[in-house]
Image 1 (tube, rainbow, N blue to C red):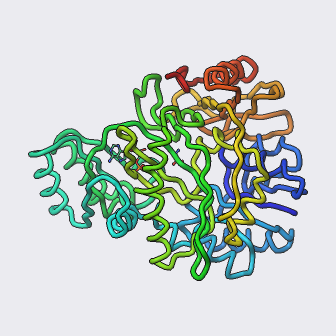
Image 2 (cartoon, rainbow, N blue to C red):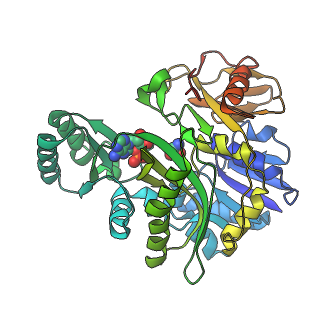
Image 3 (cartoon, rainbow, N blue to C red):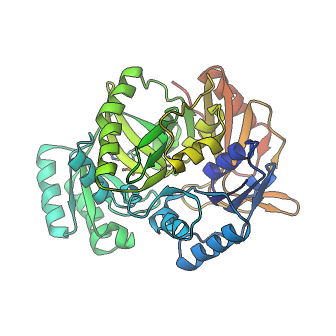
Length: 431
Ligand code: AMP
Ligand code: GLY
């Protein structure tokens, strides 16, 4: 069969790499993909097919899927899901994995997600939503009389720029004014969620999810992962798209897992069923853990990046089988089997990232060893090799019997892959 992957990051490279290993797959297309994906066996990129959001872009992809007889399309990033790509492919009779536009609101509207959590009793931080600036300010002023910090979240998609933590009212007021009045995030920031701060450690749980009206729901959980969001060692500096991932997440105990199932997973499934939503795709639970008690920070309507690069090397199953079972509603009796051991996947970024950074530098690399794989993101292929084209350039994923060994292998990769100005965190996977 032929598979089409929508997206261009490290997550999509890891998906393409894993899917190409399936004996059922002849060809994997990535639209637009990246230069690293183009180097994988069976994989082809469509660099001019970057638009999966506009109606015209989606029409073009639908025509491609038809003419190429694509058996299955998998959507990597959130923007095409929020723009209804799944509804449009399905209306044309094409198989695609992902939530419908209505179900993708779990990620594309934080107000919707919070009200869903409250209605169905999914454990999460206390919060209130506001579309009116003076009321938001009054609530925040009152909040700081009792507590601090406060988390301000833009309702809509904001590419990682929509969540800000504040310790006092004047700072909060500035953000509220920028989001709600000046509109620095466009429509995304016109409504905000003001949420209690939760201390703890973060864990990401990815899963295949099959919920559709009239069919029994089922979910298959992936090994828990941890993402390192801050730019610098020790969790310092600005937030980024992710500076590395490890899997399994250290410290996520069996008792935390049981609490997750009872306090978050079960009410989520019940809520999706009761709302009559069609969600046949991947879901991401962003958790905060406090002494084995889980709180849900967010849903993402897709796989995580860079978590996918940390998790898929441990997958000891044919990824296509999971995909078909998600679509057919047959995940219930399907056991995902995972290799033992651990993965460490630090990310190499261009100097200056997440601020302004340079592109167009040549990436020199040798083929990976058996226990390692380079998942490219901001890398472009030209006739004479790969060149940097984004802030996060690649993940150096390595797997071993334990996290310490995986870490050692992963960091060794940086000796054989290099571009001018390459930077990375040195503490991914350290206890
Ligand atoms: P979100 O997009 O809601 O996951 O927020 C992005 C990041 O902000 C999370 O991964 C956390 O690191 C942080 N964050 C969000 N909500 C909270 C909260 N209530 N308490 C503490 N940190 C939070
Ligand atoms: N790693 C967080 C995300 O994919 O949103």
